[in-house]
Image (cartoon, rainbow, N blue to C red):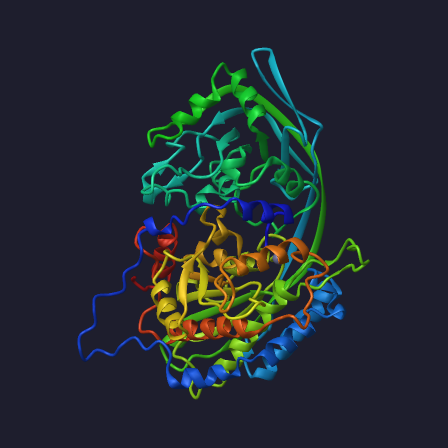
Length: 575
Ligand SMILES: [Zn+2]
């Protein structure tokens, strides 16, 4: 599970909002089938029999091994990482899968680059001899946009660009074709949230995340970007920005993508002072930014910033195996199951002196679930029509890097990937009447999941914290970005035989005592009944997708529909 810091997870957990997805456009399944038409079989007898491979014994034994002290917390580019990957490869060979790589390899190796930027104590802005200076840490925070020994912005003009969003599906373009090359773009956080018809109301879309904003500014050729921090628009206080943006930032190696020199944040008060320097008013600019007709506002303010970086390169790998599909045509298409295999490695000791961050729940459990799903697939009398890939991605905890690398260097064209189903941190507290699903309301996978969950007498609930942008903070997001309909199981919340709120209590207790701590270890209190059901659910949902006539589709107008159309066009398929 990836969050900036443990604090941010806890704080975000407190920022509850009412479920807003009821207002969203829900995908309606195709028109009612004709009387003789085959009903969309949710779970066949064969699929049920195969699912008996999914057992507490198997899950427990995999988790116990992977979270053992000898795997040293599975930190990327460590001996524990190598051991983990070799172990997973060995398990897949034993299950009788084929290697996932086009070259017959089981691992997709890639570099990760650590960048530790040394920012100056003060950052100054000036106009007509007047000057405003902001203190690093207290008022401004910045990371390097470049993977080089030095980064610099030289005498660049600051331009206020509203939200910094270009979203054709909402008729929204904050840049209006203005030349922003070499400028420093000052931007609001989040996406427009006052209108349910715009950017899904108060649900935070990708457009509302800082990652998007820096990418968007880089596409304009800007030298730098500054996001104005407010606690409501970020979902966390400035302290989270300070702690998560200081120290080494780990990324994939730079390729041909446009890059900023610096990615910065300013406190709201500092941003106000900066805007005042130009004789303008921040509140008025914010108001203007709410209109589709907004155009960028050059502030006439100039700034420079130069800094040194410490660079640290290392190597890790995704691990993958494949079960070839049985249909001559459809076997060229894939359902991809994913779970991250990495965790935090060895770090600061806890009160008991334990330094190994075992990551039993996060995410030895997800790896075990996907391996058990592979076992169930192998138990089918005939493989499904489409091929199935079992993908164990690396370096998730450092910012979803393994899934990003795979999505940017897939071993098949994105247009032949039918769906991604991701598992991170399984349920260890027992059976639930529900299952939560991050990504609900976005694709035709909803209907498949609803039908399969109904066979377990479970109801499907949407992400309980839509304003947190959880969809964009786990591995399946990188698949969505290349157009692949994706879902991420969040487990249930409503535990059978337990009072209301009990599940939330367990989760909050785990977050406070074990999340990203050495004590995330397996013990006798773990109840596998819920994890078994979630694993079965994942198996059957993927099996339905793998056997269906057509691939899943995004809901019309979804933020990822454009990427899917492009991906399908590239392989000559029309949606
Ligand atoms: Zn995690």
